[in-house]
Image 1 (tube, rainbow, N blue to C red):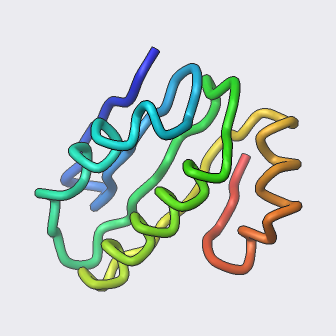
Image 2 (spheres, rainbow, N blue to C red):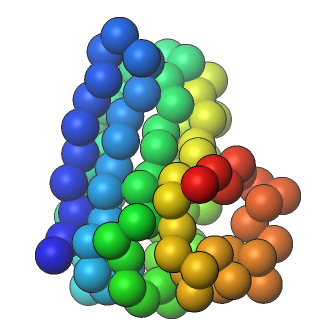
Image 3 (cartoon, rainbow, N blue to C red):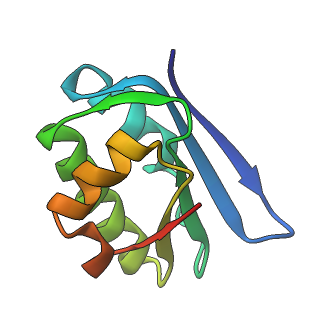
Length: 102
């Protein structure tokens, strides 16, 4: 359970995986995963395959990551959300702000 990061230099991607609950309790860990990664043009991929719960604070954290990515001329992609998580993202209209894949 928690948050982890993997940097893929060749793919120019940073993969952040959130397992278990994605709520305010992981805000510090989530921010730590990307705050020092200022690679121009990198794609920030947030893998939500193992995420069981997502609340409004998590949506806010995703928007802060989007700001960070755009500041570095990058982009953000949500990948592999479970069906309940996908429904939350759809209700919040997150497809307007970032790609949702898988």
